[in-house]
Amino acid sequence: MTLKETLRDHHGTVTRIGGDTHFIRRVTSIGITEGTAFQTVRNDPKMPVLLYCRGTLIALNRADAEKIEVTA
Image (cartoon, rainbow, N blue to C red):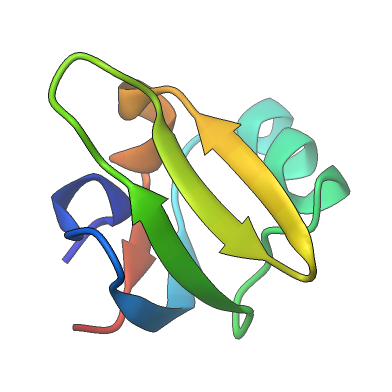
């Protein structure tokens, strides 16, 4: 499942980051790496996905959240 498909209060782990090298560098620089635990704080349609990861609240646009695979 992708990060975009998670529901509010979902706890999981990042399993794979897809996309080009620019995207991978960008998300890893903000702390989203494979094996990282996270919690989905908010995931409303047409709004960014908010997640709590490594002690920080992160907002990702929906297209970027679709490139990140997570545990169910």
